[in-house]
Length: 128
Image (tube, rainbow, N blue to C red):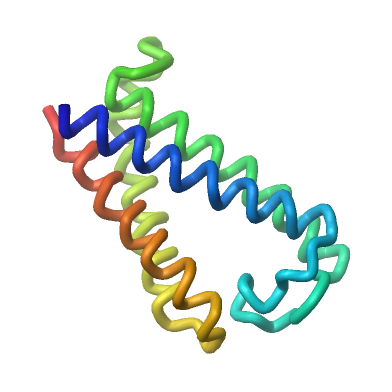
């Protein structure tokens, strides 16, 4: 129960981040809430393209977590058993960066999200 709940929570959080990144990519003026707040307002084109890359990476991470939890893609189980540690590492780095950001707004919104992603991915990683 904890395993599948953690995987679903992780995936829900990733979905929120993906929606946010998509909004940024399509020109929403929320730059102060991302990338250290370096680009307030609408992100420049290269940063909007980076949002699209982040969407692909985040979706892949969610697939790994859901596969490791046995919810989807049973053929990925062996890969996911190793890949989950990449997800945990990614979540550690994301948490550190979101806690350290100079953007107060970004820190208030995304630090708790990234820490929850870390906790839930770690629960999935250590589950047998």
